[in-house]
Image 1 (cartoon, each protein chain N blue to C red):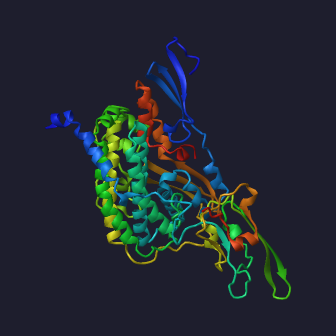
Image 2: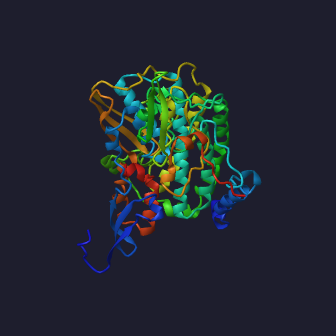
Image 3: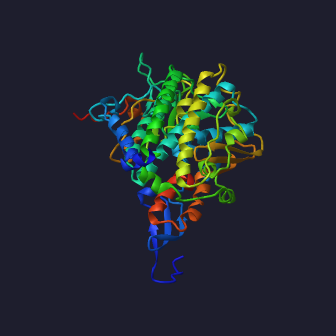
Length: 369
Length: 149
């Protein structure tokens, strides 16, 4: 890109990898004409740890903690995707009790992830207050995680075949208390941001990605739904008992940054609905399916995708009948969604690039793996 | 109405209301960390400990090596010798490389006699990487974090 200097007004600059608004170690090479972005290129790989290769040297049980470290803001979702894939290879299904608890924890994690996104995105735009309030509520979710499985971020909450940890005393009460409190808190965030003129001016019409572009790029999650496509894997291919719960898929029409904000806010409310329904009827019974102690799936392959907070999270796993996976491939939502930066940033202002990166909701641990 | 709202900065006042409401002391969440240590949950996975039998002071570990096999990072080393009298393995050394530990809890799950346990001690910072490699004595005693007053 640097050799196509057509005239002196064009300027190539690096944004990142130490730029705080790139949410980690993303480097974006921007080609500028004054304040306008002519072109942008992402350079990724600063956080590459070779997770997929590590999997080939670990047993199935051993690899489970590693998937938490890809998307560390929604470690529980990652763990669920991994466990579901191995369960598909093994041809077992988690018992209903485990499925209900998994749904509760995954939806709590979706709320936590969206809260962190909202706080940091607002901070990028210049609104500092929401960060403190969102982290305050996120803390409540993390406390539930800590009480349940002993860790707050990299939880390792699920095991292949079900749950290792039984529910602790007062789990339902704690989750219900969170649900009762949280609805009003979402209203507070909306009060702070939804009509705020600076917020609206900075986000409306910025980073438009229409439905056709989304489908071309394979973009999923809130970005796709903000463009008006009603696509949610929880409804489209229900897993872990999602078909029992009644919830809506929030969509918007414009596909700009403001719509993505609205979709995520609405998703938090929908998650709350799911959690309420799931907590009300956690079935009794065993929490672990009959899984051999040494997990040795028959030779074959399996692909399972779930709706992670950021989009479609897929695991493709090939087993050759030994205790180690032959190959694990991850389809991370952040990595695929990051491609949308280029069409979105074209023609935008430099300050809008910050908003656009924020609105994609990337986690670099997952982009680079 | 909408026009008036815009003139009188209605949206900003709404936001400020939220900010001022949150000044109430019941919303203070800051932890006074070194002065007050937070109580972590019962299931918290922190520093490892090698439990000893409180009655006779002998280790509970039976040197079965299952924790070392279960560990994804392969950081546990168990050294044992076979006792010719009891025909059992006696634990000699036990090293746990805390600098590589990710506190997944798999070693704890694998232990058949509840000898290895991840405790609620969370203050594990140190000045050197060597200090993070714990030997048997350290694992049995647990960490001694400095308490600043």
